[in-house]
Image (spheres, one colour):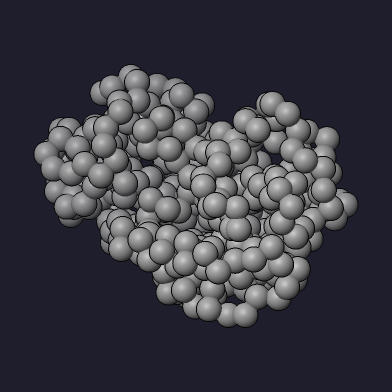
Length: 360
């Protein structure tokens, strides 16, 4: 298995790509300090390599899509984690406690064969990786947009909202290199490790938030909340704490979240009247790769058409925290209208909000 991450076309498919996807995920997790997740993915890789039987492993082995773009290893890892969190496979505790001298592949094989019916549905859709820490990137981008002269009152639209955790961003407090934003103390507090100049200091207001997802998660449903927790890497203790805080916050007032695909949602929302003095903004994080190409094209066309109609009193912005698939880094990129709509890379950022390397 590769010790280093290999630069492979994310949309590649065909023989050998499944094994490469699992090997790459192991390398990525190891580099990120996610040793437990690395062990689980490596165990599945070992089972595939030795030809272990069963419907789940056969479906993985014969995957028809692009396993890297589909995040196939993380789909499987999420399902296995859910078995452990739900108390169905307590023997996996030896892995999740990161005990040494354990035959990981044997433990994972036993869990797969005993609970295959529970695991198979996890292959049907991409991971739900809702993470409140990404809100710090959105807020930093809004501060920058206010510095460019856009009205500092933001009407936020989010695609791929999952459980809508980032739709509650106005309820959180942010310390961005000393720039304070949001209520004190806030439902959650974020102070990412900051590199570079601080963001501009402005008073901004989140006027409204609304989001969509093709498989929205209801945090009030314990089963759905468990599914979301299963996608959190067990090494990231703070993310579990944030998830519990988000569940509590959503119970007070649930986010405005609709069941709709990205293209339909954006086209419909951009057709609605925009109040003067507000900046309408599309935002999304670690979701673009899961949006089908035809929908990506429709979203882009809708945004650019609306941008052409934008005025200083009714501007439009697009904030994206997504992976740069050439550099294999996550970048915070903004476009805005009027203003040309040219992409501006504001920062490179940790995908879970731990750090922001400000480039402006």
